Image (cartoon, rainbow, N blue to C red; front, side, top):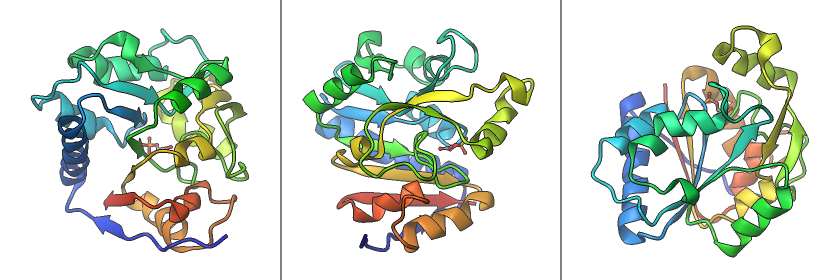
Length: 227
Ligand code: PGA
């Protein structure tokens, strides 16, 4: 599949990365108070969420859709529902009923997303090139689905758990086809350990072995990196 090489904009440090992407979110919400946003979890967006909490933004008409969740008790301290509440939702004036998470009824999530085109989707990238929990080998046409996590992802995410055995092995993720329907996509990556995979995904072949490479075929993508 043919794609366009994506420019990786390198920022001075993690703060600049967070505030640059916060500017994009702020602009989006100010231009369109009824914005539909897709949001990520993980360590990369922590600074972004801190920055957004400290800005005077009206979230009262914003709808959010999370990229993925572990299959685990949503009240668990390491669930992505808890992560979003602690880092963003409980600290801004968003309505809890406007905060959507994938659940096992994947069709319902797809229908909700289809009814409301996504204005802005923020992504991180995994060390194996995954976006959301779409692991290498996932079809570029995939929709929201239940997935098994790769060994690499379980290893990478074990830092958040007491032991690797506590890391969930399954998740529900928006599909690559679903993500690609967003009007605008911003990919954030922080740390030198992400640089190699970022270069491969943005400048190399468009292949299902590197899920993030599909972004080369999207018309409105920005990629930001800090080391
Ligand atoms: P990280 O995860 O932000 O914790 O590095 C990114 C990802 O796996 O998508």
